[in-house]
Image (cartoon, rainbow, N blue to C red; front, side, top):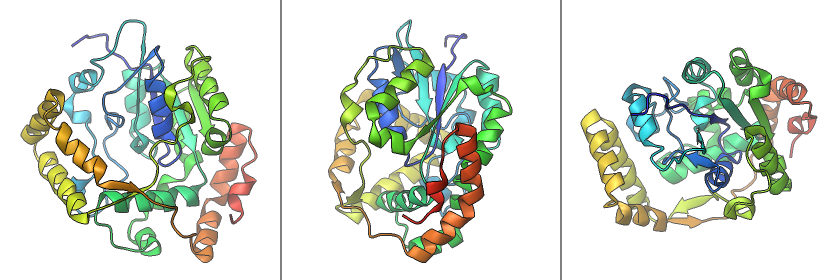
Length: 302
């Protein structure tokens, strides 16, 4: 492994706030090499899904796999390119700022934020697409309070700013990505110091659109396979080798075919929406002050 291996930037979050779109656009920029898997979950010792049932089914920290494992995710890198990755699980992790800073104090950080109630509702339905989560939204919030804690954006950003200077931190809004994706992407390019005239193919495409499984049997089979492979270092290594060999492409294609686009879910219960908005009102205003943006509309019912 190259002993000088360093990431130049990391995307920190939030979930359901344009992170997949931005990671894909950056990966299409000739001056950038993104990790082979979007979410390496390397610079964390925990994950927002840690308290969910059957922990093995969900994304986990890969920090203990060592820096060599992370470097392997950038096999496509060529000299002159920036190296970066996007793991929204970093946002709420107390140890992540220190781990990132220890890796590269000069690295830049990308944050993107979306109205908390929208993130929670969208994230809940995405989880249902991937795993057998049978609770209704309100019950899920009660059973898994960490879901609410994830969206205390200002609290989390302040933890990163305690170790990184403000000029190395880029704070974005999902609303801006939707309203003017070209301008938003150009601003990110300028922040990273790369060509801001690049127009990647995914710039005007919707990425990571809402889907539902055609077959819950196939979905549950996928979950079971992930649980088995994540249970031991040997099986994780075997899975990595199979992925590199390309023999898993038919299985990956099966999973893709099992997902179908679906309309947006019914609006959230107004009382639930009001309760969530009230819970985040103060944190939203503090985030707005930090960004120099008026986010008071986040605290009003949609």
